[in-house]
Image 1 (cartoon, one colour):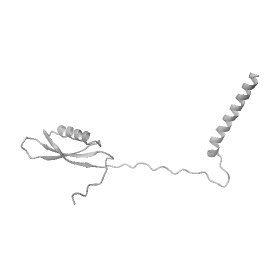
Image 2: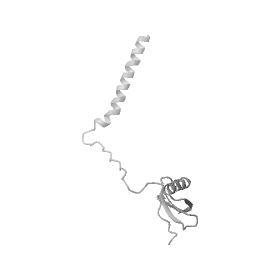
Image 3: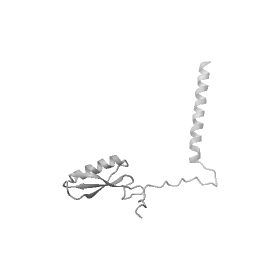
Image 4: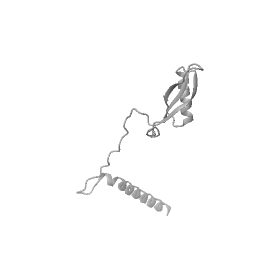
Length: 119
């Protein structure tokens, strides 16, 4: 009793597997006459650009001496967070040799168009 049911079960499973494999590969390998196989259009690829895709351009006011005039120091950061961008800009200004970093003069978000406020 168990031998025949196990054999029948195995044969059924083999048939089901073969049918599944044939059905999954059949559309790709065989097409009906008169119709051409569908060709999938190629996906658009990313283009190389010279401008960064994200990040803030931070302009800091920096000085060499305490009573000196403030000069702008602009840094392009790779962070979209204003806090992280300011920290990166301050580190870059210190590395460039500026002794006093007073405040952020301007935030330029590179992902959006310039504001029309100046007009």
